[in-house]
Image 1 (cartoon, rainbow, N blue to C red):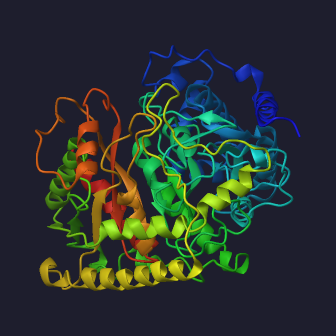
Image 2: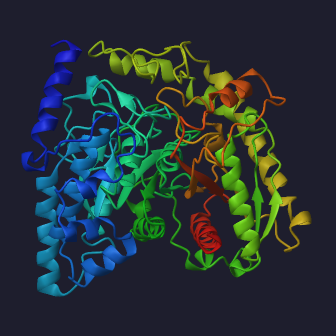
Amino acid sequence: MPHWTALVAEKKQRQLKSIPQEWLVTPPPPSTLDVTGFPESCGLLNAQEIEITNTSVDVLLRKLASAEWTAVDVTTAFSKRAIVAHQLVNCLTEIFIDRALARAAELDDYLKKTGKVVGPLHGLPISLKDQLCIKGLETTMGYVSWIGQYAEKNAVLVDVLIECGAVPFVRTNIPQALMWPESFNSVFGRTTNPHNVSLTPGGSSGGEGALIALKGSPLGVGSDIGGSVRIPSAFCGIYGLRPSYGRVPYCGARNSLEGQDSILSVFGPMTNSLSGLKVFMKAVVDSKPWLKDPLAVRKNWAEDEYQLADHGSGKDLCFAIMWDDGVVVPHPPIRRSLEITKAALQKAGHKVVDWKPIKHKLLGDVAWDIWNAGSAEDFAITTSVTGEPIIATMELEHADTTAASFRLQNSGITAYQLWQVQKLRQNIRKEYIDHWNATASETGTGRAVDAIICPAAPFAATPHGKNRYANYTTVWNVLDYPATVFPVTTVDPTLDPRDPPHRFYDQFDQDVYEMYDPEKFKNAPVCLQLVGRTLEEEAVIKMTEIVDAALAAAK
């Protein structure tokens, strides 16, 4: 077998050949940190393509269904913009635009002949994280050892999306083996943040976050086991949803830690337009995925739940704000975003109380113990095929390589020890339900708190290698609570000066505090999470729409 570096070189050559040469551009110099304006100023996209790529998902679908815009035109526009995005932030893995355009032409033909759309996503280009297998393509997931392994069939979710009329056209970058809140691997390299390329887009769905932030895709699919949809959504300033286990089919996709079925990874939508969250979830759920995936939950889309039947029909909602998790205090821009959101909700007539977190450090430890029961062995066995190194840092080469490792070095724990951790998790889940129910005494609505609003991370997008804490998202995976991410503001050095030193929870909290430099984080998006109860995706989406509207009205 060739040395792993030769396999990488050959794969990169093939990737380069998959890019239409006439779409190559001259990117701005490395000193240009914010590249979000470049796709529209580079000259590659015409006026209509710029209009198409700036259009929200609901309007795109309407124009596609009425044949005002053809699927070929829409797919071409997003494909061109995606290729520009890739040249700016290195966000793509597999590029299969010819296939996508052939599919789009079939959809146009069908609409012309029958006057009907194929399904609810007719003609909509959709980008996919590099786990979702597509027949005839490789899915390396950042492993050199998986180069040359071609899928024999589509993942179930890919089939569902195609049946709904969607047009998959690119797949997006991830960290080697996933399980890291940044995006760097030995096959495709590092993805950067389009708002500031010296910062990380987050991970593990970082390619998806960066691509969508540059409007190179209207809607993408990420996955989330500990924050991997929500962290890149937050760092890149877009909307995202982590659904509950089994709501979106996972069968047939590639993954790390396969067989670990205690804290499951889930697929969820990432998008520039809030309408995309509902469009995606309703289309997928209406396709009855439980007939195709044995782990998919048999739950139809519940329109009454979306209309907030369980939440006073959306009038006089009570939101609880978690200002910090009792482990790490968020940076000033995050706190400001919470204050902005609180004021906007109160102005809109909703009630806001404080959320008291319980056992968040323990919940994070439980996740770590469950995943690490076998993760070192999983990574070692997968990489042994080629001898590629297991990446132990996301730092830039010349930087401190000891920071922020999400890779465990030990050999795991016994099955019995794992059971004890899983039992502890069950007990905490029950405590958390009781804790949530008990808030009914302070809401004044006769109900418990309708949703929690909290940071998605204690910081905005960090410099590469410095995203050291994912617990603000991971706790909700452990509890299996659905959560969205929504944009609020951006880091402004004038409004977000450094806090004076104060009492810290511990040394780690102090280290996170010392990371903050307003100039370094300048222009980074600031987003928050909205968290609901298990399998309450419909209500969580609707309440996010209510919060988003309140923020817009308060501006």
